[in-house]
Image (cartoon, rainbow over all chains, first blue to last red; front, side):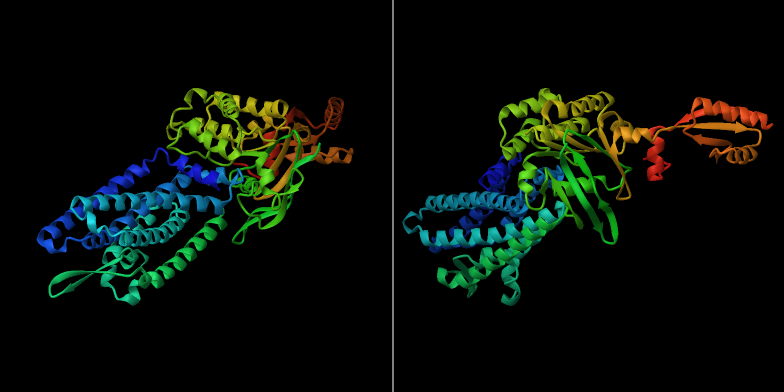
Length: 252
Length: 303
């Protein structure tokens, strides 16, 4: 397994995935930091971390589904383009193991993106003079929610990218995901729970609400998010197993 | 010689159509087995089932005497293959592509260098595989199949896309493999001339069924000569000779005899002249392998 995983990283060596992901994240962070800076300038009393985390959660809903789709598509598409399934299977690689290696590879890349994001957010907050109130608990909660949602979205994107050769479908799903991720909160809870992309906001440790024409930020206790997180874990496992089995049974 | 590959009633059905049906294929150790058939005959599907890339609908595959379904890994560890179009990562160089297979096969660097040298890609190893010509991609595929010096090499149309010089080189390479490395080669092609020059054993497949299997000599023995005699009245000549104990057959504007020696041909000529039937022409027609192949497959058009 370790060998297959290291091989996945070897195979993507010239694809500049990390560079592309970093640039993509840079655009997201630039937008988020600009928005938070303006908000802080208008409301100096809100000099806290919560507006920053809430903005990042909201923008993750738009950017990360698309970034996940692109990364997973690039990792999967190389097997379609070069007809390499035959090559790999004829040297006794198991499809299920290859599926897992690709999944872990994509998760590691998105983990790197999340770590960069949290580091940049911390640097931004400290730069704004919020050093003393550094909310370690909220940061960890924010990161956990982002990672969990990433993992489920990657499972879905990988299934589609490996099952359908034309990557336009996978990228379209990524863009649809971005739309639902951004607008998920406008849908009723009964509908929203089926949009896995809306969990960037749904599992965010900070809630935004409008009271008397003003935005208010509320910290959510991690325990309160556990049921939603558990449902997401179950959904992720189901999607991963279904995808892996489906791909393993396909004829080459 | 022991059997390296044996299939028993191997079948593959897509919907209600059989792509391969009741295939009993036997490849012996040290053979260069030419698997011949027109396009769409079921060659690639058979090879895919032998390598576990497609699941048989019915039947069994044994490789090195072991059941494929039970000992897949051990079998594939000793098997190199190139199926249909070559497989490669276009964004990686030729050498990096070889490294991918090297890591999976766990073989030393030496094997990579040697395999690239054999297929004459050593000078292009640092070029991206996506920029290779079709022939170079094909040679890279062969190098990948050779990198672990397997006991069994399965090549599906290995000379596709190669220029005449390249075809000659690959042909000589394949011919040398059993002796140099003790390999057994199963090679498919729709080109009869190619199989004729390389193979020691042949299997002819058509519409999913194995029509002939045996040594190349056995196939060539079928190319017996036919004596064709054209007379002024072929129908009368046929009746007359049949009454004399011969077995002539009317064939277009001639009567044909199978396995007729020189002296017998002279005797037939004498009898016809004595019976007042003018003999206009006597010719010997030797059937080539192409005729035999067309007879077996019933394909008169392009293969």
